Image (cartoon, rainbow, N blue to C red; front, top):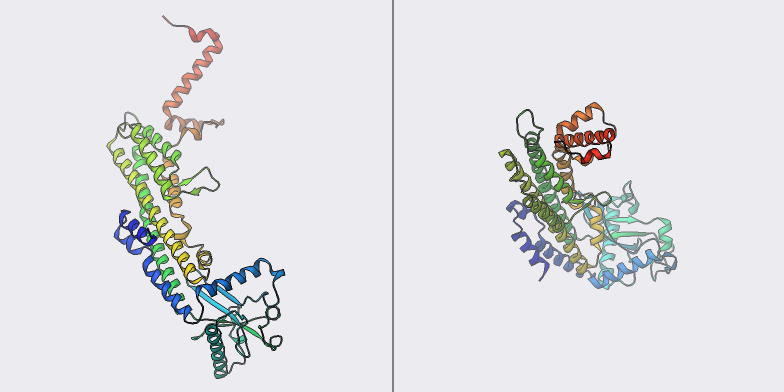
Length: 427
């Protein structure tokens, strides 16, 4: 079954709100855009086979620059990359040409591509004459990037690059300056701007969901701080019930593994498995039925629902990430431009792609909810029992402190009366 169908089925059957589905990566629309990119490239002789061979030649030079023949050096004759930043990515397709005659350096290009590049170079020369500019160097930005005009962009190549890449079959190559000329691809830019806008929409959706979940954490924390507070006088508390629930939750590590370095975020399938284990254990131990206060039932339901919503967010994020990487793979297969590695690098800091939401919300739960009910393991090896700590332990661990006191008293009596005292029975 094709991915487009599987993706639509996942969105349809994933119990996602309509607002989420509307914000999802539009895989089929992007697929249509790829066909338009293919047509535009083919119209100038740059089919996938030609571009793939050019890209392999560049990669070979990068891997073994010392073994590259003359003319395959620092000035890559073909370059596809992204300018700009994650907010405004700009794909660029560049070829090296002779500045004087507009002849491209790579003899393997098709006649259509050579003619097209030649026309672009001549157009630049006419544009320079009309504007009074003597050469393309004045068009360079302070950071070395080309400045774009309405037709195309040009980068002047420095002397070191020029020496490394003489024009093939040209006697003027040693004296003529070289330049990288950009082929303006309208459909290519449209594809990536559309993809960037869709990632933006997912960023905004994630921000809203994270804010809502953070509010839920605050509400749950407020409830737990009341119902799991230590008992005062004759009031009953669910402190021990919530301690066991939170201990199970910590064992489950639902959304990220605390056992691995820096905590690895779990996949949606892994998180679902851990959440199911946690839920099953709560039921198996009858913890909900053991509550003394009705508010605890409500708080537990809210806590379970909160985790289910967070899991749903993780699932939605995951399938959209898969859709993005699949569409980039499709783009590369159709065009051979190698965008699958370059575009994610540009977007590496994007909130949606970094998958930090589940971990961020989980840390908030840990700091603002789980911490309200101290766990005994955190104090077992504390040898400095000052008065303040003793009061704390008596407040939050009354059963354990009482049992420990009895154990200590028994040990003191054995020390006083001998080992046989433990077997004595008082009549």
